[in-house]
Image 1: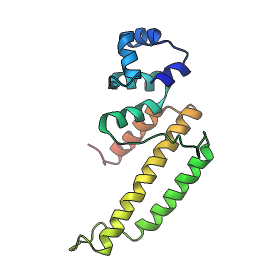
Image 2 (image 1 turned 90 degrees about the vertical axis):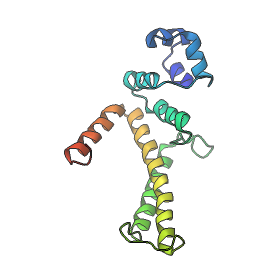
Image 3 (image 1 turned 180 degrees about the vertical axis):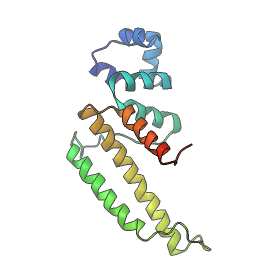
Length: 163
């Protein structure tokens, strides 16, 4: 949250006033002494179209989730992210061709369950890189993160995949 606040050239006091919170509470959130509440996350997403705080908060609340790539190999290289995503998608397509989720498995140690487990591991990479790709594209090209997700949910509703 601190990084985002600073990129917007806001002091803790200015942010506190904007969010109807105390400066001390903002300081504790930024210092990790308090969890960032959903209302703060929603504020940043709506006001600044920044998906990164939302992803960080999910990680903070549930202890797992999508982490922004920050290792020495990355260095703001969006092309690398695209290559990683393409590689994971290709692996996923290959492994999914060998998986049949409707088959009844009698042995937990069978080759089929190994294929299913492998597909789950690969899909984790696909989800991770896909989400990073979407967040990067939304931020870089000023595509509204919330609108993308709202439109996606609307599509799911129209296909009767959600109630």
